[in-house]
Image (cartoon, rainbow, N blue to C red; front, side):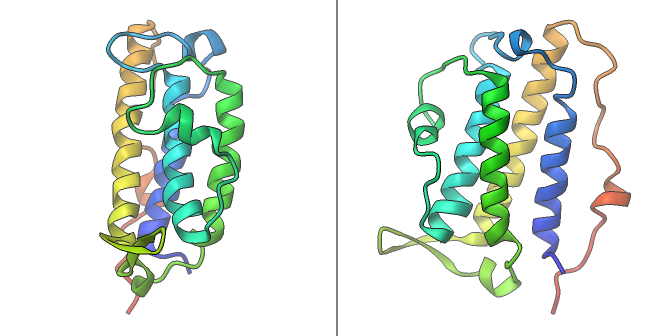
Length: 170
C-alpha cells in the first residue's frame, strides 16, 4: 500500500494537471512579470522531482537539461508546454519507481548527496515537493485568471474520494 504522503503527492500532481487543462501553447508561454510562465513552472517541478526522487534516491539523471534550465534561480525562459509535459511525465514516472517503495522508515533517512549526509530527511523533501506544487498551482491559476480564463478549478478536487486522510502505517 502506498505511504499516505506518497498518495498525497499523487493527488497533488493530479490537481496540478487539472488546473492546466485546456491551456494553449501560447497561453502557457505568456509571462506576467515578475512571475515565470506556466510552461516554465511545469519544467521547474519536473526538475525538483528529478533532483529529489530520481537523482538523490536512484543516482540517475535522465534529463540533465532540467538542471540548467529549470533549477531554483535559473533564468526565465519560455519553453514549449508540450515539451515540458513530456519531460514532466517521464520524470514523474521515474520518480514513482522510488516513491512506490517508500515506507515510514525511508522518510526518516537522511539524504546523502555526493557521499555526504545532509541534515535533510526524505520525508521533509516529500513535503517540500507537495507544498511546492500547491504554490505553483495557485500561481498558475492566477496567471490563467490574468489571461481571462473563467470556470477554473476551485479549491481542490475530490480530496475525500481520491486522497482522504489515512494514518501512517505502523
